[in-house]
Length: 474
Image: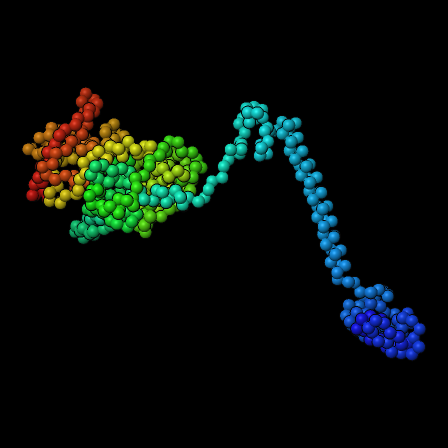
């Protein structure tokens, strides 16, 4: 009857591959009524019958088993039919939604933004004249900045500042210890004799020696050219004759851009000696412009804010636009700089005039402490708070000049406020002390003082030849 099945009953017969045993069986229906089934596929039972096997299917008589090929074909055809129906209904639904949106835009009192490429009005404004956003001019930003980095990296340097820290311990004893700190710099120019590098003032502050590392891993010693502590800027110089021809061929001079033309969301790149590990690259966007931030020393400055990672060691490095132009000088000297996603840079348009002035200064090296020049004044610091309270210039107030001192000989008077020393801005006693470290006794400099006259302060520029520090004051 069925393939591979054996039947026993009162009638005997045969089918394609089964065997029947029994007496005088006339047909299959008689066998069904009196037969015991043994096999894999029993599909029918009758009165008093029993079966043994898998997949019993009562009530089906005389049907052949389903062929797998036909079942798969039916399923495929069913899937295709369902897909066609789904596509038909989805198209109808999309058309209905599109028509509904168009109807809302044209017939209701609510103005909605158009779909990309659709024009709501010729001048792209709402009924009351409010501008509508448009994405027609949006371009894709290429995330591959490797070519820009390759072009500008030769203009980047790492700076190591070797300085001496002095202080007083808990027992009242003074101490000093040698320390090092790291930062970054940007090659911005060269003169006939020097290679000029811009960085942050706090990167080179109090330096006994400055070591610069170039892209080819060679090192050179640098000297202070000029500093501006208020803007946290400095220019350092390296004699060109101290550089090999191979180094000169491997380095480059950076191109300065225009930070005034920056836009929010514009992509930027930061390069610097992060954490002192060597030059590294991060990227992001302009998060804010003209951001006023309080610095660690309590002063304020205006910066470019970016989500580009700027860590310790990045200070003095470059913030670049996508063209590779320097549009900012990174600074990590920001209160609360541990906040993620907020880095700051000095706008290059504000820094450029100061950098140009600093490059014109005379290059000086730190002198031995015993040789530092002497002014001969007693002084009082005019802080920003005192300046605001009493309407006085910020700087160093001269309480008294010593008889026969360099200050008295230069014409400095009691009541004067020293605001600059040889072009260096003097805002505090520490500023004056730092700048004097580069002037020996006998050196000549220009001291700028603000002198009270008739209820207002008048500026005087006085030439001074520094004296020798008395033995009892050393």
